[in-house]
Image (tube, rainbow, N blue to C red; front, side):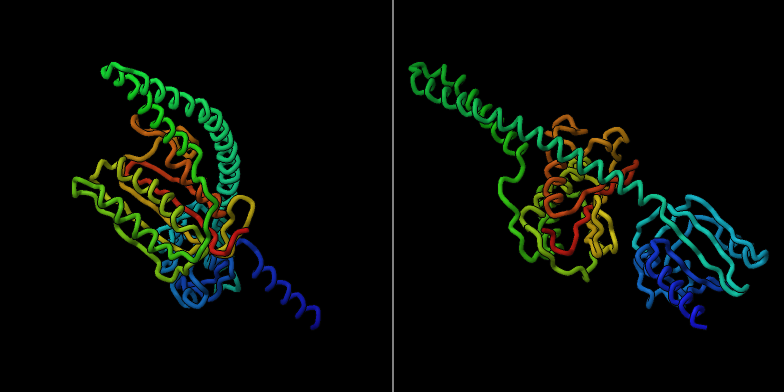
Length: 354
């Protein structure tokens, strides 16, 4: 009896600690049990999910009805690979799904994410690539700044010595172009101050960005829809830098839409998220979604590198600077795009980062 009790405790511990999501449902797909990994996957607590019909908390893009019927009738497990799992908040994942019979009355639904490992590897590569390219660009910018300052100073001295006013037109051009390059270099160097961390309401930041972008829209045909989770608490961040990062992304979306279309600002809480190599218990997820033409697959791979842009008039610095700011916050920016839908996702840890 003692060994049996110990085995039961161990089984429960395994179910509680495993990263694989487990649900127990009956013939009517009513949920009778889910483990913590399942709560994290669907973003719904056990208290809310229990006794609900499975389809009301998540949707598997497979014929689940036939799968469950087959398992109940044959008492044999059923597995389907790489299927889409759609959640209530609009998120989706790619999972392997196994249906395992339990005593003829219940079925264990086992869902294992297959896209998470690929995402983590991609983020690690993105962080390394971004840091290396930013270091290179900053080094070049510093090397250019000193001779540029000398060039501007020499042009000013030359202008003061010229007696012919018509010739000053040329020195004005030199000074003006030197100032333009100085502004570009300052942008390449990114924020020139340390983050000033203080309690920040992320929805006040989003509202500020929304107001600024709409104020610049001239056609009146651009709409920015709010989709906020009011339960997100204030957290330590540099509000000014957060505004800059989000403004770069939202303005970029507005420019792509050419003032006509819809941008959606969405905020959510996500649990047990790995960013780079660090796992975070709670993460604030901010999504900027637009219904524009989309970003080519080739450009998506280098989107956050300095001097990379898909617009003829772009500098290729806005997204790079935004990524740098969010990195300093301990987070990351991801992008998914297809024709008619582009989503930039900012993942920011809610616990303080050292």
